[in-house]
Image (cartoon, rainbow, N blue to C red; front, side):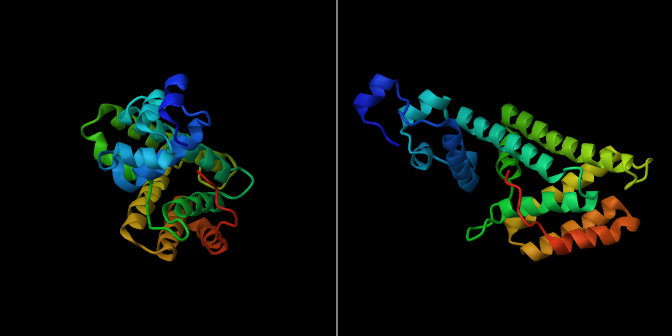
Length: 227
């Protein structure tokens, strides 16, 4: 929503219908398309429906807005993983739910492949921007932790060997997720990416759970978890 100059002065640049989450969601879409450097303030203004003074008043500068979108994406991603990795289904099926939910995000129906917002945009900026690098590292570690917690639960339940290295397996699970993000952006098909995920799940769960991983792949995700 755009305000008149008169209303901007009275409200100090913030729209009457300002909603932080909606604005961050729309800004995320803009950054996702063009990256941080390639996304202009005009593009952000169009995406959010807020003019420049309104954006500055609500979020600070473009850099601060971008950092806010990264924080929001990671928070939503962790929440989505927690839902997908619930304890009432086998580990193989839980992992497949994570990967299917990710693919639903990376390959939106009716849209262009876009991959992972964090990896697709933050990796480029992290080389020259410490704040982005910190958020990238923290985000990846957050995803590792969610995988590790579920893998340790699988060990407790007897699905995995007790002497398996849960931390290493969690990083393998994350590596599969990163591969799906990159390859989806590069144009790999959903079917090929699901097959890759299924083989990765079989590796994590071990040969004795290979059938469970194949079963998870064939069933798919009935309701993808939104991140």
